[in-house]
Structure formats: structure tokens, C-alpha cells
Image (cartoon, rainbow, N blue to C red; front, top):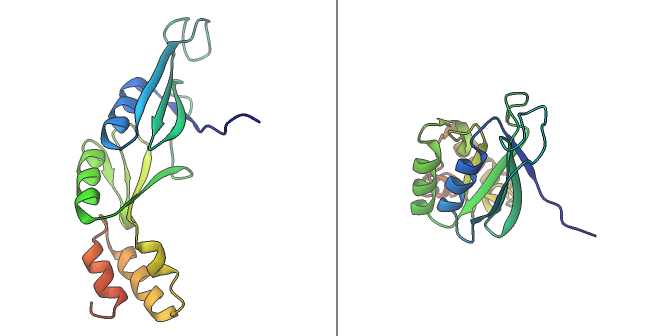
Length: 159
């Protein structure tokens, strides 16, 4: 069996978006850019770009499909970060020209939704102690950009 590869429909600027995302994440790069050789509903031959790229070792396809479909919250890319510095760096880059949202979500300048989350959050919210899990979840729900220190304080009942 072949690979499962997410296909992202950009209104325009798929090549730019892929290069931007790849510049932010480790083990990421643009693999190829091919102009569609036939006329399509999205544009004449040569105008639609199909971009193969890799983000954190995972393959993606993006293309300039035109304004027929827009990204929404039904799909997002989640990046688990080991420290606050990583969260801050990605948050600043991805939200520039985009839109920060609650609970660690944001839309980048291309309309793609991201979740920038600390690695320990899953452990906190799945804790066997329901009170600790609830405290961490409630703290996360109040935040825009997630703050690891604040999440730990809430989880430990010190918030």
C-alpha cells in the first residue's frame, strides 16, 4: 500500500506557504513544485502549482486551487513543543499576518489552523486525578498562547 498524504487546498500561494512552514519546523523542506500541465477549474495550464513538501518528517501536498474552498477549524496542524521558547518562536512566526485564537490555536497568514501546544499538556489533562486534569484543562481554556509555567501551576493547584 502507498502512503497517506494530507492534501491542502490553498486559494493561492501554496509554494510560499509550504516554504514558510518548512522554514519554521525541523526535518522540513519543499520537495517539489510542479505546474499543472493541463487546464483545470482552478486555472489554465501552468498556473496551478502542486507542491510536495515535508513538515517534521511527514509528507504533504499543497496546491493553488483557487477560492472555491477555504481552510476551517475542521483540520489543523498540531505542533507539540518541549519548552516555552519553542512555543513563543512558533507562535510569533505563525501568528504574524494571521489570527491568534484561544487554547493555543491560531490561523496563519494563509488561513491554515495550527495548535501550538506544550508536550506535557496531554499528560496533565489525562491525569488519573480528575481534579488535577480539570485544573490544567481550565487553565488552558483561558489562554490564547499557551504558557507552560502557568499550566504547571494550575495543574499543581498553585494558580
